[in-house]
View 1: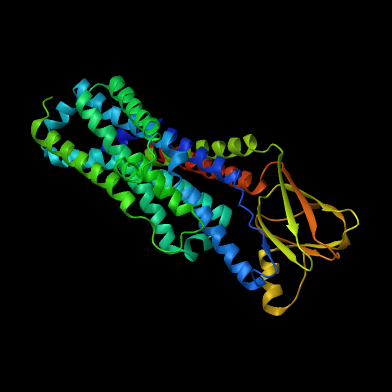
View 2 (view 1 turned 135 degrees about the vertical axis):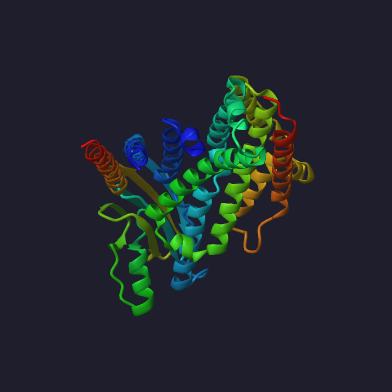
Length: 255
Length: 164
């Protein structure tokens, strides 16, 4: 029943529209960067393989892990969905759920899990469908390892944004203030983080760490494994925030 | 079940409409220009991803007395040319100093080869103009709307059956 409540009209529709529009706008303007080669650099067979491989990687990178392009979408959707949790807290609906024979941990798992997974699944489905239309199944099969890395980046960036929004929601506990504070914080930190250029500082800030990882993935020079250390900070901060939210929700929260 | 079918129908119709609107909003003319230098006895190979809309190539070879061969192949044609040495290009122009051609093509990866046939190095100015609605995406949008309508009709029929 919780999923029906969470995705009541027009929440699911708005998430879907936004995901499809962002994915399609990017795909319809997709211009594969033309690489000029000369006869003494490559034989035709290596040209074909090389270009096809680069094209497929580029398409997957742009659509499955477009961290920069999708940040506004992700921030807005999670701010709105977690604000609904704040709405339930302020309206007394959460107190009603707590009076039912469910453990608080179960309620948290279901509510937080659904809120995190629904936008992620819709986003990945929309973008995967676009990749299938534009590049075909070969894009996934040609570089399965690379595709998995792009999926990991998308999941990590969604988890980071979700954890920040959930934390602010449990602090603020009111619908509109929760929505506005989430957006202000996420946009604010994104803009503020851009001034840092030192590598060690950028790795410590989730937004810049994710951006650097995204650029590293898209680089044609990337032949070996990507800089996984860039994902450590966002993962650690997300897990820590969600753990704190869990403990607060199950032990301290008064409704 | 009835509720799910109804929601799925509405979501699919809205998704289909979004697809068509996104297609229309990106259907304007886009012009991309490139300039490449090709040395003596060299062949330049360029790759493009072409969408399912109208695409026109305008290629100018500088200096004007220079000559070049221009070939455009899709991925399958290039593969076939490599494997069975059977060259059937989409566009083949020999010893020209300029070219202007429109393509009737499918969505996909294309390879443009410019072979320098002059006694000196040449420049090739390549202008690629794409415009129009991408038909395959529009068909996908229409298909999604039809699927959504089918879900809504199913939901209505199930509701009537249960009421009856």
